[in-house]
Picture (tube, rainbow, N blue to C red):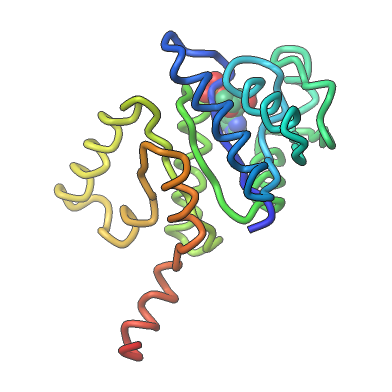
Length: 193
Ligand code: AMP
């Protein structure tokens, strides 16, 4: 596990737990020798995550579209900043650079990134772990809705199960480290290992 991509809000949110959760995750990743890949901004939870990881001496890689450099105030102190042409390039490069993904509280951009990575996993385009970090219950309703999607027959259990949900960053990271992709799991089951 060399690098984890973190999706999170470009706003701080109304509850101080969200910025604190971003800072805590940044510090935790560095303490476990894991580099951070993220959207490259210096605002909201994104900025808090990057600042905390940098202050702890970690590697922080930003990936930002040229057109968003000003709006999201590209962070000036990152280990490296990749400037890309489009949102699609941004997500593809963030995914390529990372061994797993964590979504912190955020808005539409964060949700879009989370679900794109989840659907890429469903399609077998990658087999990297993805965790939803449910800081202070922020994602409770979304988790309930995902369960409903499964109950109503729109999401298969195996695909629902690829989204790890934890409230504590340490536990999310532990589950990410021990994640077995569904296809490998099927194979292990068949071998009765
Ligand atoms: P938000 O959660 O809306 O504050 O956005 C968090 C991050 O997601 C910001 O860096 C946004 O630029 C980014 N974002 C928004 N929409 C997209 C998208 N369609 N693809 C990739 N990133 C996006």
